[in-house]
Amino acid sequence: MTRDRILIPGLRELGVHGVLPEEHERPQPFEVDIELIVDTSVAGASDNLVDTVDYSAVCDAVSRVVSSESYELLERLAARIAEVCRSDPRVEGVVVEVRKLHPPVRSQVGYVAVRIER
Image 1 (cartoon, rainbow, N blue to C red):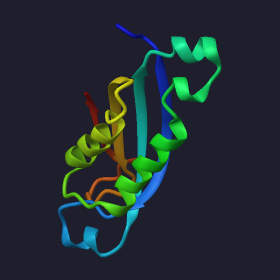
Image 2: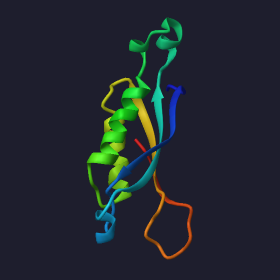
Image 3: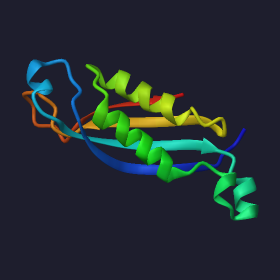
């Protein structure tokens, strides 16, 4: 099993996700951490981008999901991001954490989050 990881922490994007009507009125900030499980041994030897997962392309794809798709639950948003990340067959697994930075809760919290592994 591969132990190599490509990490993309703190990707921020505005999106319209949530259950409450007020969450659909305007985009709100989300933050995503992505951990791609990838065998980097070929790229480590070749020093060639074609031999690895292009993290720039992953960032673009995840940003598009957050900003242009709409889901009620963070669980679905996280699952959709994982689907996009796993579309490259070199990605053996992925850990996704999605944080809603301004959740509609009475308590003062830093954020609410969902973390999934696929």
